[in-house]
Length: 602
Ligand code: SAT
Ligand code: MN
Image 1 (spheres, rainbow, N blue to C red):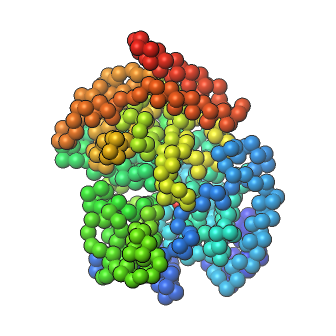
Image 2: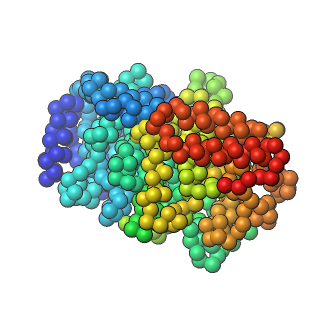
Image 3: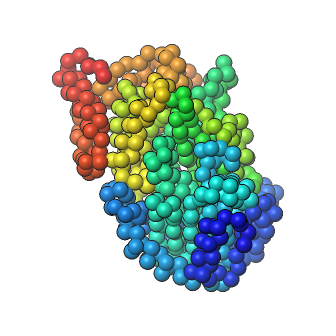
């Protein structure tokens, strides 16, 4: 045994007896270990080396074609009391779930190696960081966890000191979609995942631990685990605001976190702290501070180019694991939106010119899977913030919620108060993307972008969010809350806002609001910028388009508020009354403005 921690020792023994592996490997997290695993995966053809001249130490993994995204329908939160999981989660009772999972895991690692991966979510010396141990039979998971977390000896040392860790058991099983389940047991800090080797289903430190289990812990202990990027916006004067922003999967969090300012913004910098998850705590002064529990990125590849995200594009030229992209004839990785090169072999591993099913020609599908991913260490990001490893985290000035919406939601607006901001977050709706299995492009409610990730009843979650206004020693120090929509389209289906680097124009207004430097217009749904306060120098955008981006249709918004009310009601008496009070205020203001009277203010 390679640990002094008794609980870990006996858990590994118990899992060994259950799964019957041929070998046990305790991961130390070293580079040598990573290299050896990569070499053996190349031998077994589960990894393909990419062109070493153009992409040194880059590898391609092609997953099973049935296993390319998170599977929300097979993801469960198992609690004593069903209502604690809430209508936002699939629920199964603990005994049935364990029986089912134990049957699947029984003997499943015969002939395989069992890897024990101790990992730490958050800077290793941060009081806010938490550890876990993932047991898996997938070397692909091990190498991804090495890039995505602080993994190995250091994490084990912390576990031995603290005596606490989240238990995550994973097996790829037979990759049979009928035998695929991701189960969470938040009351005992454990996860069991079977039958998928992909992303959030298998890298248990990410969505399973750092969001579902951590959100539950955060509620018990008074902090927040959120599906948010964290960035630092530095002005030419050298002032930096830290901003946390929640968007659903595959809506541009990685791009925003790595934004490169356009020419007109010389002297401005965006520093990345995280691109997916934020853990936020109130400090003694009542300031909300955030850490990024992760140490790397598992980003969507399609659409990443020198133009859309030069930072990520440069980062993934070396030491990167690619999953489900295509390849050029000379073995460079290729994907839709790369803007250079041509695919020769698609993500099924099939020659693009062949007539075989699955190839681009026949299926007319993309050569790279729309949810294909890169895994890369954050250290390769040249804009990685110097405070990203700070144990105490960074002070958050603003929280942004957003979704992908063709219509309705304006480019940006600010809440009237913390409580109104919580309603704004709870009301987020977005079009579904390829990050989860299922139809793409349907609008669904995705409160705080946490629909697939909140490990407990949304009603209790909103109450927890609201409690920060009372808990903070100085509530006026709480971040201001904004909502953005980069995805509004005109009648012809064209995007109205350029997005990408130009989003800094909106961030600048947000920073000015936080500093109290700019006035705003009170509308029924929140504070809007005056059109001239969004800097559009150098942009080809007309005043009319800006007006359209910052307009709302009162009638449609009244309908939206009714729909939000119906949605909130699904959570029964767990929905905080405060949200209904906030909703009633918005409706009253909309009605006043609809009848043409003067717009009332909060
Ligand atoms: O597959 S993951 O859950 O890690 C990616 C995502 O959906 O954000
Ligand atoms: Mn995500």
